[in-house]
Image (tube, rainbow, N blue to C red; front, side):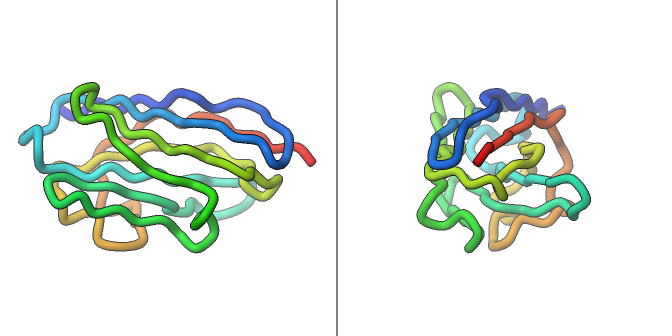
Length: 128
């Protein structure tokens, strides 16, 4: 079973930065997977904002975070990072990490149905 756990959320002022971490374990094939970040703001639908996959190295960033966020991975630590810069109040949400046992899941905008394993979520609050 794939295990997923997020960390790194918190409260920052607008313009600040945070780095979220998604620790994973248990992929069927250690070099064939996708990991995505979703967020859900109060009263809004869950939004897929980024994903990364191996072995193809594909990445995706939604227009809403393009140029401010970056996704990366430390393969040795089996951890995926979401570096969030120039944060805005509208970035306030619960951020969740999700994983799939296939690199095919990361082909564009992450969709909930593509990912089988989810973390508990971490709160990010950006104040103006």
